[in-house]
Image (cartoon, rainbow over all chains, first blue to last red; front, side, top):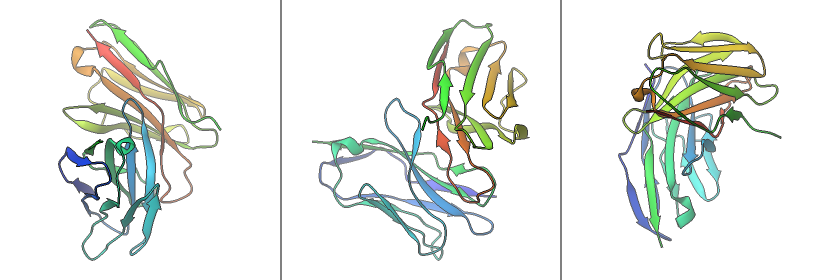
Length: 111
Length: 115
């Protein structure tokens, strides 16, 4: 079946540090991959997505590259801010079906 | 454009009472999803609809939970009778189906507390 594995949190960083949150997946077919972000007290928002191998999704300084050979979609940001503190979810979709989410990774950024 | 609208935003009730959560999807979206989020279990998909028809309800925890979508602009999730272990944040999400690989849009959630 389809599944997503994310690194355990929390990830604790100082402002302006480099961020990586690992995500690997198992899927039949050729999935699209997503990163969602959930700020405290809010619903999930789409952060970025990639629909085919080697695509790079980017938004708000965050990037993730769809790596078919390693079945990965790691989230990166060069310089985090306190306002990036949130929970980040990796997810996949194999077409018209439901999204499969990872367990989420909490990011805490201190000034 | 208005996003996904959920009501109420917060609900506190006593064990045994009936609870009804409401969702209005984004206009034009044909798919609707109900999720539950807890610290212990994370984000769980309860049920989803395509064109008002339930497609997969395998995530509904037990018969106390039921969901309906009487029309394209409204859905309810009902818990009867409610129990303390139902306390969670319930999210509704919608998607424009017919377009593969597109994203879901989430509502702000309803925080349910069952005493």
